Image 1 (tube, protein in one colour):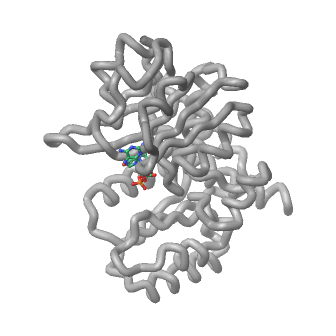
Image 2 (cartoon, protein in one colour):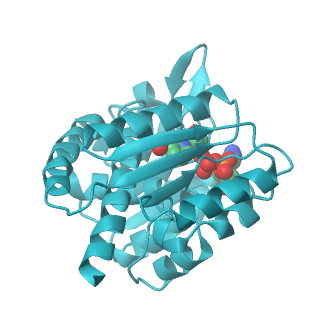
Image 3 (tube, helix red, strand yellow):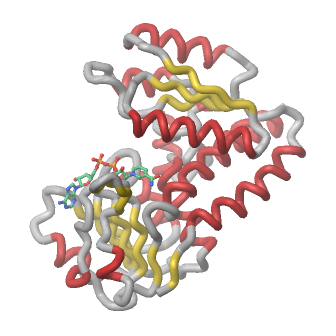
Length: 277
Ligand code: NAD
């Protein structure tokens, strides 16, 4: 089995991005807004801020006990601040917040998470916009690993806005045949068995078992699940080691590529502005 080492690939890409950042006229500035006390969310935003500073960006976290109204006001201020290039509001939001209303408020030219309807529409139309970080990171991971995509059959398990749905369009753009399985699919195994490439983005530990895939499949495990204090993916890694041609580990697979893709989006936000000046 070939281990798709997202940690090593992301580290190499970050070094190259750091060099490109030096050639910009303006230092990219990423602001991450956190409205919850959720420990996992706090660790994600801290990792994002750290990676941003490491590649030469300016970055800060705004963490507050927001109401929906004060969060919208904060976004308005960041939209108007010409110093700020990228705004990321960490999801999920606290219960009762209208997620669509919050996302709609972000200036699409600063929406480095790519969830604003403008950017999602650009994605569907194969036009230039911000692509959500996890799907963008997955495509980059596949390409950096020289995995043949054109004409291959990819099966995505999971249809969330954050991962599964944007992936459909990105993989179609790579000329793959795309199947999507989800919680209401009748026979998951029948859908996953023919996959040349399987992408699991579910949030159920060890859901994908050896009898669900064909020998030589390539697996991208997006899942991050905490089991007995340990992080595991959606794929039974140990059981599948001898079946797959290549597979990502958890942790150290998709996670670091997600952070890299966010940095690249922020860099692109500045580049696009400088190119249109
Ligand atoms: P989500 O809960 O929004 O979506 C889960 C999807 O899985 C849904 O579309 C649902 O239909 C499907 N599903 C649920 N049970 C299923 C089953 N038994 N069979 C088939 N499909 C089923 O989750 P999400 O935000 O897309 O995240 C999915 C996983 O990926 C989580 O573990 C999350 O922590 C992880 N994640 C990782 C990264 C990363 O950077 N590595 C980024 C985002 C999410």
